[in-house]
Length: 175
Image (tube, rainbow, N blue to C red; front, side):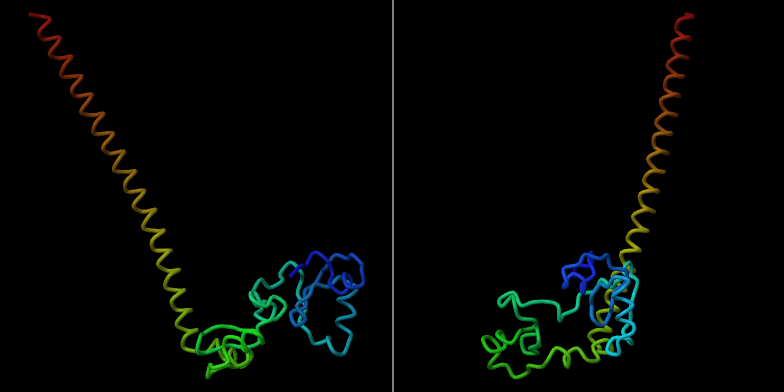
């Protein structure tokens, strides 16, 4: 959703910078429209947020069907585990046994076992990524230390070899 302009003002061909976001109406509001929004009976209980902390989630009701671009998703087909618009429901899901509205299908989703399992899986993956990141850093540091120890050992052997060659050279140059 475009939030570089106040949406009610934009509809009136005005160009005002938004200051707030209405969570219920899902639109950006300028200061003047925010004041009106707070006093009108129909919208005075709406949650208004600073425009800078506008939610970034995507509302399913804002999404449009890829086959029928002008129609929003209104139904969920349990048989096909997919969202569908009115036209898709008639064209492709007429014989499906379990079609329900998106509102009914999404009710209680956060307390469903599949949602809880998905959250746990995501937490596990995030923890695994953190562990892998830590292991990678630890291994890299270990390899760097070991490489430095090998370089030091090579330098030591080189110095001892040069010292021994110099000793032999001095020994045989006296004879």
